[in-house]
Amino acid sequence: MTTRTLLRSGHVISMDPDIGDLPQGDVLVEDGRIAAVQPEISADAEVLDMSGRIVIPGFVDTHRHTWEAPIRGVAPDATLDDYFVDILDTFAPLYTPEDVHAGNLAGALECLDAGITTLVDWSHINNTPEHPDAAVQALAESGIRAQYAYGSANTSLADYWFESRIAIPADDVRRIRSTHFASDDGLLTMALATRGPGFCVDEVVAQEWALARELGLPITVHVAMGRLAGRFGMVRQLRGLGLLGPDTTYVHCCYLSEEEWRMVADSGGTVSVAPQVELQMGHGWPPVMQAIEHGLRPSLSTDVVTTVPGDMFTQIRAAFGAERARVNADCWQANMPVPDTMLTARQMLEIATVNGAHVAGLEDRTGSLTPGKRADIVAIDATALNVAPVHDAAAAVTLCADVANVDTVLVDGVLRKRDGRLLADTARALRLVGESRDRLLAAKEEKRAKATA
Image 1 (cartoon, rainbow, N blue to C red):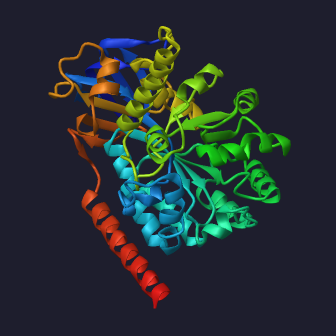
Image 2: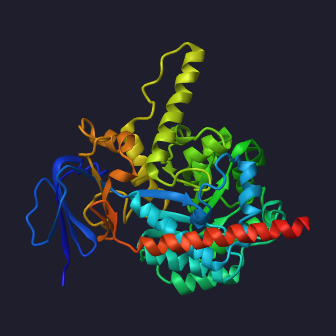
Image 3: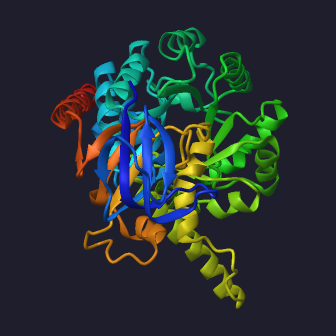
């Protein structure tokens, strides 16, 4: 039996150039798939009244360490160097599978609440074989579309982040692949989150890239975050190892050399930028425009809620403001007019939706309101005081709206948020993540007491 849902009379921003924007339009969903996007549709369907709503594709977050939700805001003033010590060498070794489950469940629901329908979960917390199972289970419980990126353990900063000789355990990656991701067609898919050159010796880098390609997994790796990582020349090293390819997403890229930008572009690689973290923690200027200038389609990501907010509105504005500030300052110093190519509010919506789907390797399924794609749809309340009156619908989303204005969220055609309320057991998620916080803080204090005894 066919299940139909009709989103009626919204201001539709399809992000599909063949459909464009419909100031008053309908979106028909059949069995989880977008069936039609037209000014008016008649169908026997459950009707969701989108009057006063801006209807957009769901946001795509292409890089988030979702497991960190129980320690949200614990490092508000951290630099990148602080993060390695305060998070990866202090909290990460204390994480149990239950903590990972709590973090991924609460973190994924946080995404849905904020209109993020697709998430790349960069999960470098696999301290035991039970940890990845807990992470994947929580993603499945949440109902989000996610790419689970299997990463290393984090039980010792020295062992895992300084010329590490410990490779991600191939047998466990194969187990997770066969157990949870036998098909690549599901709501959840899999990738490999690798540390890359500079953090690992060449032998480990080659092993992890080979493992990903053996299993047909996309690869995601941090590069050029901060001047030190920039000096590693990580992309250049990968080129020397013969490992560059279109299956790899490069995260941050703030200090890539001109040569490395060309290498990424020429190899068909993709880019994820985490603007608020990059500005706040010292990674460097978010290189959104640099990526565009090299023919790439950059995406946005949150990175860590230990230090920054976990919503896409923050990332959009951080990237938009930072890039325009940088260009304006450079032009002022050079006594020349600003170029016509500065980022626009409309571009930021493209970057946060269809570009994100492209980077996650899911553009055939999501990222735009295109008939045939899966129904990952978000409606923004445009009648709220912080959004109304609307003059430019794309700008209303990117520069005016916030999480409180996310009225309706569908993932794969399933309602996950309606009338501003998540359709999930949020009380349970909050209880679990609160219990995890308390346990982690107690374990941290116990560890400190033993060290000073």
